[in-house]
Image (cartoon, rainbow, N blue to C red):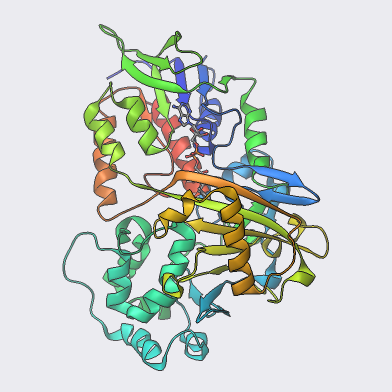
Length: 476
Ligand SMILES: Cc1cc2nc3c(=O)[nH]c(=O)nc-3n(C[C@H](O)[C@H](O)[C@H](O)COP(=O)(O)OP(=O)(O)OC[C@H]3O[C@@H](n4cnc5c(N)ncnc54)[C@H](O)[C@@H]3O)c2cc1C
């Protein structure tokens, strides 16, 4: 083990995890002199998160909001002085639509993040058959699973609520969050609260009758002012820019600097970073390294240092997706779009996963009389669609928007944003994989691995993971 806290610290990756790690090091360092370097392969900071402005539209090209009942993002925004920029989602249009037999219907109110808090609206919804509704209500009487160990989300929902609830509601809602196949997703890693409710109360409906929510009990506390989700008035780039401005005076910032590998210096405790072109001839030594790259990239960078750790990292699978952002005249859209978005069950056999009605969530995202839509294509269940070229992707999206929401006419613009291998998939056994990664990482003093591939895929998870890595590095 290292005896003294490190002095020269490298952070690999300038996405939100890396930026949050750098910021936390500065917050925690006290009087300690730290020489912090942040290395980013690309030409801009923010990684998967970014905002562009065009023709009066404010366009988040990646994530556009974050959950507020996890502390990571909300608290960081508050500490950065961004409280006034935090933007609650518009109360007028809260809720989601789900496609059923080719037409959009509201997800029954009370079907809160995949679990029913009130059966009344579900009984009235046309999305489920009478049998499907009875089967859901029967959940109350289904005993908890006896076997220990992980289970897929699909198996859990089918077992407790029946196949209709899975195929018509849960699968599309999960697809909208994880771009994943619920037949492969780990319940323990994605919805641990469901498991807890089943174990503790015997049934989810019983738990809900006692007022326990599937998202935790704290939705009325820290996040209440912003609803369950919040964005930033100027888009997520505001968070990136504020972080960069805060850390730049204290951190040496390296854009366009891809790291090739981390090695251990022979006869010493230091790590040596090696760089890929254009800085191939460079090598630098550090006491500590925080790696915040996507797990597959982390695996290749760590391959020399610890092949076993690299192999554990590369066992986390990723899915690709594409977002097509389009601006429309409201008059060109037949559907009233009275929601934040539309999710599409796989069984509907359409070629899009979900559509986010961005300017319904945040009205300032489009000029008056206009609508900003973000349509998701590909994901784990339709990987081949992420390979289409831009023109074919835009054509496909226009056809699908016309068929599902009655969108006609020429859009003001259409922008294709690609996310190859960007969404980590928390498959069955994920928590065991993460435990092994953490066990192996702990054998290397001064090494930390962070990001959204381990304990949660969202913006708050990435930020919290970066901040925890920073704290661990400073308290060896
Ligand atoms: C399409 C999409 C939509 C999303 N929507 C939401 C949402 O609405 N809400 C939400 O909460 N979350 C959302 N997420 C998830 C969220 O964006 C991520 O959790 C978060 O941005 C991850 O940040 P990160 O820093 O861990 O990873 P990244 O942003 O991937 O950052 C990693 C960085 O490492 C750099 N890098 C890679 N290799 C090297 C190398 N060898 N050397 C140096 N640098 C390297 C990359 O260029 C990148 O900048 C979405 C994700 C996607 C893909």
